[in-house]
Length: 543
Image (tube, rainbow, N blue to C red; front, side, top):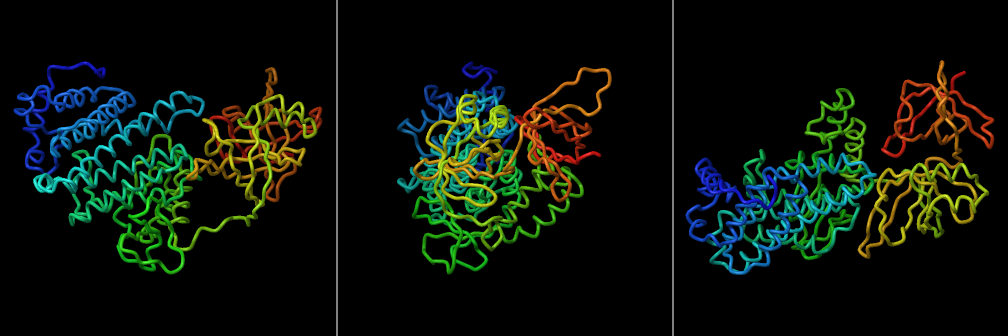
């Protein structure tokens, strides 16, 4: 049903909900789509009436449209004065519960978007993130009202555990959507998260487990929803793709009961969060500083399960995973996530694969498969030609190692900048292009973006690719990039092509050189990586 059309069935719908949900009447699940029909009929001009109407309309609406409308209405409710605490909460609850399905659907839709549909990506992200900001802000308003009016809070006491837990949960969703854009979690977000926990602790209910939604199978406490939010950030997802980030989020939900949380420092509590400072969670280094407002937590108890789950998934495939995986997830992504979590949840700090050194320099950058291929095709010495084939960028290197670089990206909008993006790069004093993949994107407190670049080839060459066995057909050639023209120690030759050009059952011939005078006949062995822009395949030389 389109948003904005008022139906005549709303009262009957909610009266039926109230009759069929005794728990909602008694306060077992506060306000879960329940309402006082008599009160609403007597106060037709009350904002609750509009909230009821919108809640009915959300049911058949498209996810981004519903969440955009919901966020706008929450903003209106937040600005309205004269609400009692209970009335404010009931309105927010109706919006939250009636959009629960949309909150998950928009995540599913976002994960399967192609990176070329940037306009649609922008619509989905802004709808989801805007809703999370409005929802968490609305719950914080309720907490503030309860803190400022002790009498109202006393009447509302049975619902306070749900209020605080939902507030922390909404902030956790907000942090997840920020991570999807590899953005910065602002200090006020951490302040709001801390406020939820402080409020719950002040009312002696931080560890009280309550059902948050009718649709939720697992009851949660404020302490647990808080821990989920900080564990997601502490998982260091800047180096993961969107799909991998969502898998991390679902494993964190799965392991909630195995996370340790305490006000006191302990050698097995590896992370901490300071409720008095608007800062992200940090790893405990050395002897932990004991402070009244520090909360310590860790995932050490989950580590043995990570190893078991990894073995099960490797052996049994995607169906052996202990969680419901996002649509389109692959075994390789699940295994990578489990390895990533094992590394970052372990007690020792994760070590770098290669030693790094501080340095300063400039990197010339070309991005996307076509521009990268054209830069390589132009040759190492023809700077004037390569400058004209694509709009290049210059990034500042601040850290270098054998495996790649850390670079500072100039300010500006770059919708294409994300994990797995293919780039050609060369230092300012070099003529030859190297090939790299973006492996980390992060934003600091000054909104300065930094990227981690993994160099995958120091001397890549442009090539023409064709099927090795073609009978009675015109030979079709495709562009390709050969990462190593000499087989590696294990006999592999690695090739990049445009996505979807060849299958893993087809042998190809790669011709390279200025006049394509050199040829390699190659048999595919396995796919290394694939995006909608390119495919990276390992081959072996035939003959």
